[in-house]
Image: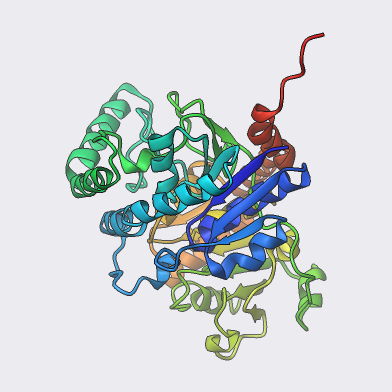
Length: 425
């Protein structure tokens, strides 16, 4: 049996997708040690992995960064790349080097935001497996640069557009990020590189959360990219239904679920409260989750709305007709695996790229605002509820997810290549 060392950034969006991978490997008899934030100790141990606490200087969730400005779009991407993902690399390398020396792993498995794993691979040649926790960000001749949320195009003119925009992004718009990365590389004795920090996936195996049918088609997609289906939350603590749960399972009215996730939920008025308000007179049941805050912050609810801090998607989504979301990648993957049409409204991190792919796949409606106008939001929800094309698009994706046995595929791809070879008789 093999031994794997996991590493993940200290946030739910980076840690949760690795849980089914760890669980699959442990179930197959392998050993997993997991270097993670202390807030995730219980979740890590629930997979069967051994928890290794992250250095306190690294154990700061992205949304808890004290000096993080309120930036969106490209400006937000630049700041996040430099300070959330690149600045920690030297200490990440130091920490991983010590762990590897203490107990050499068969391979290092890390979410693609944990850039220290890529750096350690460059420095030592350690086998490194990256995990995609966002839309695939690597540059392509068939797509515009990640962060622009533009539609892909593989036509001759489209490829000219893509080449020009990719050059502009790399050499101009992200020039300061590239220079920042070169300085950090010099500190850890790595040579300069022309590769963008956005292309930091393993050259041998990249496990991408999702299915190829959701991602943009790319004629030059790296061979290392393997889609493994929805990396969903899996088993959890026993579910205690809220008092109103019978309203959900009765099927009397179609359920519209609205969530802003667990990070971008400081102002629930952006989407959650807005959705409750615009659907007040509609013949639906609105189920809102706050992602942590007390549901009382939503105030008095209309007769057709219910709210909770958290309801496991494995329990709620089988009864959900439409999901309204700010575009958290993991939640979108889970919804589409259930064949649920989406209304996506988000403007931070990778959320515009998620929304663009939902629209491109024909599985939902993209609203280009984190706080859409009431009329636009209501029209989008009505489309998701009643437009056959969107239901058919969500069904196609559901079928694509169902064709992948995620646990078996993980074990085959990760552990299978390290299986001992039987001697010839």
